[in-house]
Length: 353
Image 1: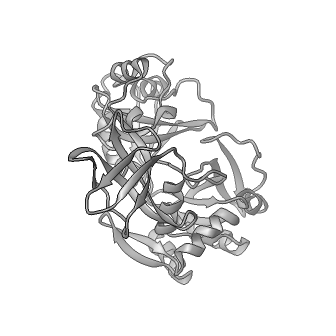
Image 2: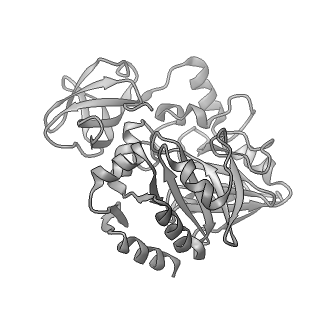
């Protein structure tokens, strides 16, 4: 019911829907280039109600999650959070996860649909622990506000948000009788915040943000912003083929926390400084945007594949994220792209504030 209500609100804003990766997605609101510019210059509004959510409670919750995830969990206070991964014993990335602590327990956020995989992976290790894991996807909704004007736009609506609020940290306010959790999150390269409410309140929050001047942003503009900012996305640039370090996710690992699932492989890779693969940026010389999984070659030898690509509105050219073998990560190297064209390895991110 809530999704259909928000869908109607988005249609009223000019949303154009497409099926992307098998899911109906808001591709754009009539002008993806202008949507992109609004995030770079002012404040854009992003529907993230499809995000996966698990809620973890029980007296052993912190200890259990600390031993499962790659980043620290024990020691997080209410309102604090971080970005982590869950890996196999061999270090392969099962999923990434955003961890938020509140007074009652831990809220785990995933890419859409991946909460099912994460819940099954955690459940395998539950034996005698006092831990309860509940899938609360659909009960919660997230609306993202991004851009240099994001904070100025949301503060009059929900209350003060500290200018120095750390990434993944949260403050809770009330807007017209509605509890709103405001979390510092950037997935565009600009300052950003996720506003989380119960799902039935999502249309009300959407309308308030629109009335305050936020412009709705679709998937096409968001992908351009994300790729320009060199931010990997699970299911595109990260999957079970790579260890977190091979996808540029060093910030998702606490190397001092002690044992966790996959820790031995990841620590060995870190200590030796020899990932098998690297996530790199590419400037692509081609007439068309190469699709994901397009092979990259050095002569006849395949040395990697493209993971995400876009024709960048800000840079005026095709840019890609790619996974390449060790030895091909240095900026300036030239590679051939299957299907035609060349690509130059460049330092990430493509865009800096």
